Length: 460
Image (cartoon, rainbow, N blue to C red; front, side, top):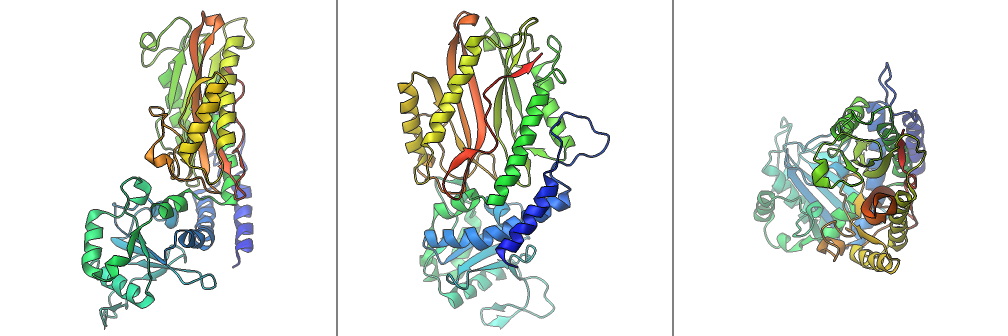
């Protein structure tokens, strides 16, 4: 099946999966599946896996100059790249599985083998029986390659294909590129021996960029996921969930958790809801204050659907009786963080490192007199995803993980905060912390996955 035909099938499946109501707070009498059934979601994700293997993987192996990529792992000690290379119906490696990718050239493409594993819906050639092992053959009635025999099969494969550079996932800096455990690494080296071990190379960028790279069809699904996140926050920051003087911040947090669970989705971190109040410090408010009229609210929510994670922070305001909008000082505080979003978005460009983006963003922020900080991170399969960091909340000077470069087709969670003096609160400083997901297209253009918050959610 050609890739255009396959993309059409994915688009058709997504059209049904993304048909959902905007009222995420409604309590339905029947199961509400915003992204279709689990089976429908798995069909979409399986097509994405195949397309990534046929388009993204070959280009990255050639970009980093490797002929073969070997990814060994054992059950419950999977490589971080695992979820990006297996079918959605696979939850763990099979005993020991060694995934082997061999680039046969632009015409033949990349060979995909799973030693001791399964075909993953036809994506791999499963090498599990009747394979040559050091010149002999496994018994015909053997259903599995023994776990130790897999290393001998790997050695034979390498000798037959003669790759010059074999990528392995060993890294001192990147967790995403450090999935080869010490035990597997030592056993592999001992078994394949010299001179083959001299061809093993550490190529951090291969695993990082493969995990980070997203498809155009995934962008469309992500927009639907963003709409759901916004609908959830709209409901949470409303009178349907919050009763001033009664509701605690923990009540709203658990509403988020329960609602996401009821939708058949998952959270990748426990949500948070915090309060800022005129004349009160964080210590005075405590860890679980009762929400009152006049409070500024902040939430941080991340959920997962179709194997994709979101990360969103929004601001809310509880209207006092007689008010119809937040004070001008609070609105200016939100505008300051909006302006910082603009600055960071303008500085994110393909080919730049995260540290370069952080430096130029902070320089422009200071020139404009904004008191803020930037801690933007990649997002996609993982909430804190593979790719260059653009600052951390506790480090605004640059990081080793900020030296990686932005690539086309990756996504970022634009996370930052700006603090402003609010005259209506006696010049008390109020921080506006925002986080919104953004997409870099295959053409290198950056845009919001949906939109960004420019007005407070109002609780009446």
